[in-house]
Length: 331
Image 1 (cartoon, rainbow, N blue to C red):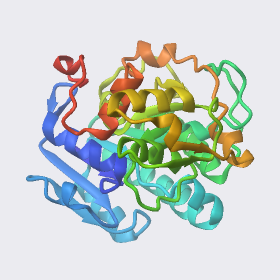
Image 2 (cartoon, rainbow, N blue to C red):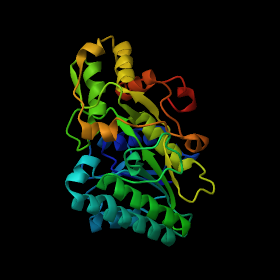
Image 3 (tube, one colour):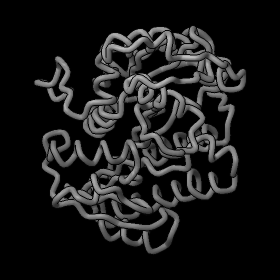
């Protein structure tokens, strides 16, 4: 089996590359060729033995030709301009998050037809930003999608078009709507939600943290490792007759107070003393008012959350952590 990961040098992409290399298979089929595509790669990806890399922009014609020649059986599409950066430059978001993504879908579909085999499986990293704000409580499979930002609008458009490629038998698409994924490295990311990762880094190190949302602000949380495991499972699961082909991944819904309490317990710090709350209305309106998520359909497909707040922070910050379900491959 040939597997391609776009955005394979990014935060989630690197976690997925490590998981794919360690697992060596998808749905019981061995991975013969593992390829990462990105503009650049960190050592933890480029140093993985046995993987190939394609360096360049997804929208470049030579990169699309390389994908066509590869003819991947499975593609995890993670490459994107993130939310804050997309909102600041809508034209760039269109080129990458919309146009280049649709070019990728066309290339993969064409390669599948030329190969004369089953249509390629495409696991698309979508976003909870497709829902909009404010959200009803609970969010259900019938909740209307009203993206409040360019990023979410382009992601939703690609979800719809990937489902149409699937309807036509050209691709086997699966869009997973990802929540805030932690803990991203402490570097500029272009994400408005970067404060979620910074909270974990700061408090685990016993450093002060200024929160742009209030103590009772709630968000949907997931560790990068659990996210990678869900993406991997997304490629192997049986979606049945679902024609929409888009699901929110199960999440932990935590307030900042609950998160601070968990970090204090796990790392032995006085989180209440270290945190200063300075709510920013615009940030809290989007990232601090997440209601209950009805994720029963996603769980029925085998997708999972981190289990407990303690497991979330340990899995997000400790690469060696193995949770209680490690024996089942979900550690």
